[in-house]
Length: 142
Image (tube, rainbow, N blue to C red; front, side, top):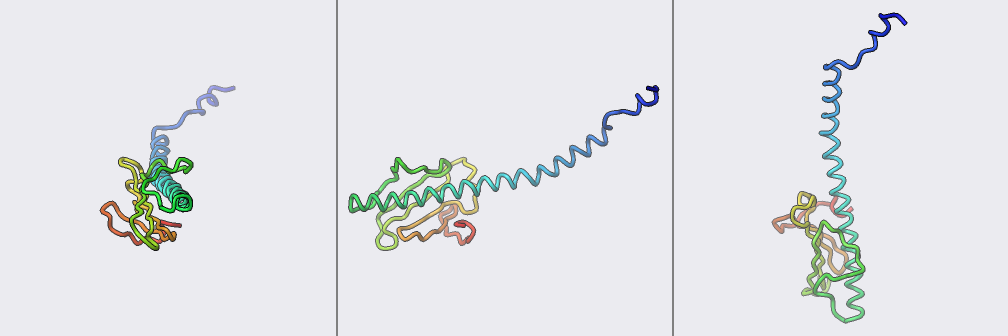
């Protein structure tokens, strides 16, 4: 092998390395928020499933005790760990009970556009923002 052939195999230049780092940085500015948003939506779906489980549990409680529960203590329900769940049984008719899932403090869900998830006795769903105002967002319960 000649001396000239050995010297032609060189590593990357500093400029090439900087271009690669710049491209990786640009990709990460798009990918990380998209991934975080995906995690928030997934946890929201988990909370919605938890609300449906609590709804079934509340109806079973009513069947057995002739009254709706006044606290969430369903041991067999697999509730989302990112939310606090509460039940209010002081209503009547469609609102015989209202179950609410509110994001826990310092959780990723605090920034969710749908914030608090609510379901009533006839499966009507709604949302409230962090100031307890109604949110009209059709994408929250998809």
